[in-house]
Length: 427
Image (tube, rainbow, N blue to C red; front, side, top):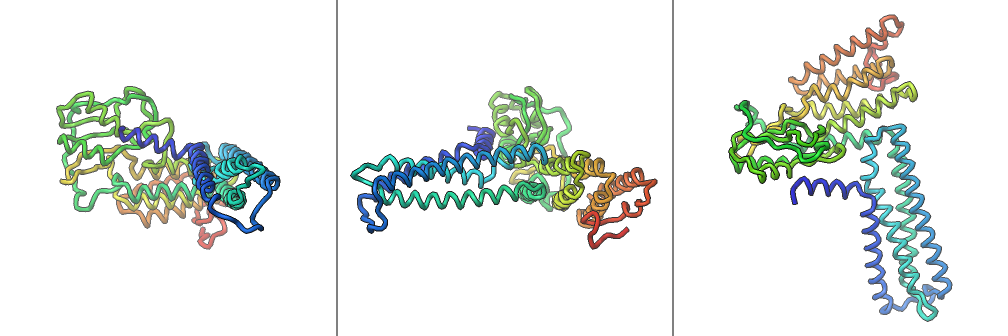
């Protein structure tokens, strides 16, 4: 099984909503078998013993309650989808159906129902599974507690700022861990990069979005053949069937097996993921911000809140040694893989341009933008500062264009992390 197939299967498992309930049902079935074995070895006090009618009624009520709770969870999930589509962005849905809390509550509720049903079937006029009835009762209490936690969790997660925080943290983790974002200090010097025509080209076998690449696998493959692999398209780019996904330089190997090996280390799917694509995290946050700035919603405060998370992610990116393309080396320090990645200017443009465009008429937005840009200029690496200065110049031009004849132009030129009302409300 290739790396890309394993990656897609992991993505499917993370996003599926039926696997966790299936695990809950199987676990409940196994627990029922274990309880059945214990039942014949344990004699409970009379106070914990039930008549057949009482046990049957009690378990029937528990089974009905479990089904009702499952239906309520599904209803809440559908509402979350509708709210996300209307108020956030469709691209945020991937975060919802991957949520561990949703999978946990479905597993617990379906498991409780299955266990209760199994114990209900064991009731006869001559025998009552007293231990099983007690365990089913405690399982139902646990189900209610998990359901309440789920409800609390999702009510809080519906806020745009919560989605932004979760998205930004996932992207910052990628920036901190991915070798594509920096070169080791002792290997930062430029080396001769391939300039000739590639010895072979690897096409895509299916259309879709590049979701991730096996960086370590590609480096190892290239090192074993003494060549350099170039990926001309970045993670997040769409490729059509037959498009070039890799170029091989310095190797005479042009077999179908070589192409299949490379194809097996580039995962292509139908939508982008954050796994190796921090630009997609920025895209999600910017989309929520621009939707908040639309005339139909007109909520600049939400845009300013998300702008703080965007700036925080940009700060993390701006403190790294970005190399375009990213250069990954083998154990001997030789470059074996060149990855097309966004540069600092690309991330900065993605994170701020549309917010400046759609929020240029809002004093709150332009003041917050100026404050975050000034902070970025102070904190990012020196080589990234000219791009920040260019964004400040564009912001000033935007303010001049929008507020040239406004009595509030002096306020629009101020800087304030909260937009309006913060302690740094200087004009």
